[in-house]
Image (cartoon, rainbow, N blue to C red; front, side, top):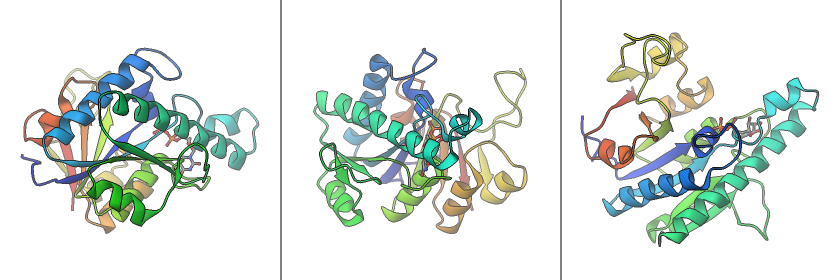
Length: 238
Ligand code: UDP
């Protein structure tokens, strides 16, 4: 199925993706590679914005399990996403891609605050806008932030870059003959509790008719090839 019709896309990068082969933190070589994938998609004529996660550095739920107050732990998680956003920005700028980071938690000396209309303008000018600090609210995830920003920025699709090339009926890393779905409906994902994105994010995409494309960002060239109709992925839509 061709995804050429998706002119403007939001790319969700989980923190895990930026960790590369490591167990924690940011792997510069991996960030450079991902930046190259984004540049390639841009060169093919797509408009891109990015939401970055923070799980490679800090997750609110894990912090709360260790005794931190949940809301404080979530703020720590949101701050982690800002570090990742700056890393992605750096890698993109190094290869000549114009970018802006906008944070849902204002921090004027580091990046721009999130202002929807300004973000729109950046995209019109061909810049890649990287959204940091999730939604700015504790008790949410960056998946939900991705769905929210995709709706606000009028994106044609939300591309979720993961470490598997789509949604399977069982964990393909554990079950040898697990079957990949080519397409799925939002209803099915929610009813079967398929672990694609959290339910709030899926519901938001369903309500706003924004297809979710799940693909493996670890495969070299996957983003551009899925966008041009090749590669493997799962598309979730109404
Ligand atoms: N977070 C939050 N509100 C948001 C987005 C994120 O509180 O709107 C916090 C939450 O603690 C989360 C952490 O930031 O665990 C990192 O985000 P996430 O777990 O979504 O990152 P990913 O799994 O994509 O790496």
